[in-house]
Image 1 (cartoon, rainbow, N blue to C red):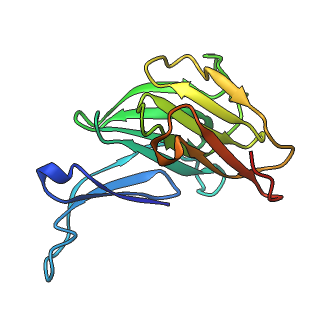
Image 2: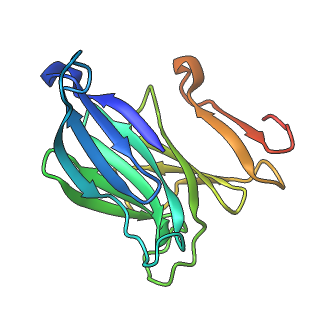
Image 3: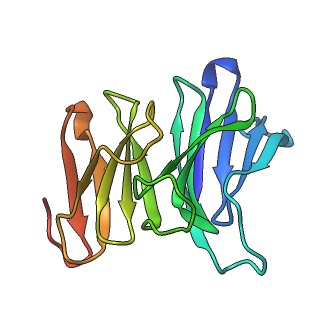
Length: 176
């Protein structure tokens, strides 16, 4: 569900993220005639057994800090922040704003990071909301918008590098 070039200054690396939360980083993927080599792999979100009972994972990459944000799996109401330099989860951000267990928050359908400000993380959620997070504070959303009465089909954060702008479209064709 996710494929992106990362850390291009250190050599071509390819980050792939699957719907089940499995993340793999590959080396030599762009070498003609070369065999891609896996640099590392991890499980970014927890899954239930049997597979298919959780939500598909979604991802966002912050290249300036080497952080991977992931949501989905058996705890779809949490956004996991992975420090990829140390390959560890550095924080978990609840979508509901509460830190208690119980899975009461909405699940995340897609994640986006700000272009002008990479500390802004936007999540399109299953309850028809768009939630804006400041990743420096893992306490929950700083803003919750509900522009539609139907699912959010697409969203753009800071289109064309314009700070403070969010554009969203619903599955019914509405645009805000």
